[in-house]
Length: 163
Length: 244
Image 1 (cartoon, chains in turn cyan, yellow):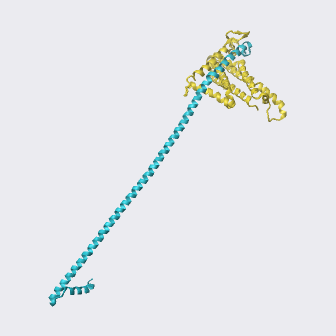
Image 2 (image 1 turned 45 degrees about the horizontal axis):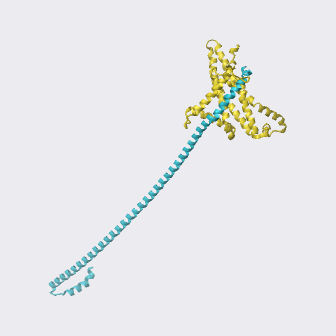
């Protein structure tokens, strides 16, 4: 078995020491720090991105909150304005209605007064006519000349039976 | 079987250039060449793929990062925060064994991890290092590592020698595990390769198919043994911090 031949033991150990030491020092000093920097750089980048993403998210949430606040405020303002307008319109309508009512009442009462007045006039006319007719009729039948005052008295006394 | 057809012939060391220093033979051999290739592959790969240092990695850079994270995770799982200091060593060990095994899977390429002297040297470095670390961390109290609390007192004369022997056999088990796996796998491949040539007519395709399947298995074992080597190193480092 060639492995147990001591002829090359020293040579094997010597070159193993040389190459392994070189490999160890090279990896320790050159290769591994390089890989470590890359990994660290990547981790830093990831952390940075994550933190900036978080910041942006917070900002976005703040903006969203602001927008919602503004929307709510605008809603409240609009509601208020709508209410105010409705109230103003209602007041306007009711005042106009009341003035219309007053006008109508006045007109109705005026008309009633006129009607009463014309009724009185008519009644006077009727009285005069009755006096005249009665004077004529009595004159024709009895030749008695009645004065207006006497007739009016009689008519006044009889009025109760007319009405 | 003639010596040149032996399945063990692949493990023979051939000097490429003969070097002698202070009376010792330190020839640059095919084994040294495989180590050189391994070291070049690791250093070039890990350096060139991470050269751009991109935040969004290329596929090759991703492989380097995955290996880095794999060993970093392994160390933090087994040792915890103390393990970070040993990361370069464990990573070098893992990559050296892994790529050494993989280079060995290339046909006609030498497998230096199939040599007990190489694996034993690596295991001895781990063993000696961990023992020194244990004494640095705990001083003379490190010997209480062999004392298992909570067992009946009359068991201690039996258990303490067992613990000492198991501790001392760590480098042997660590090195023999890797060495034997590599030896067995490559020998088996070679034996079946011999069958492909020697079997009559087209029946040679059966051992050939077996070789294809076995190559897949060997690649798995190459990774697995590197992983086992690394994780056992981590566990030993952990033992140097936390006694029973």
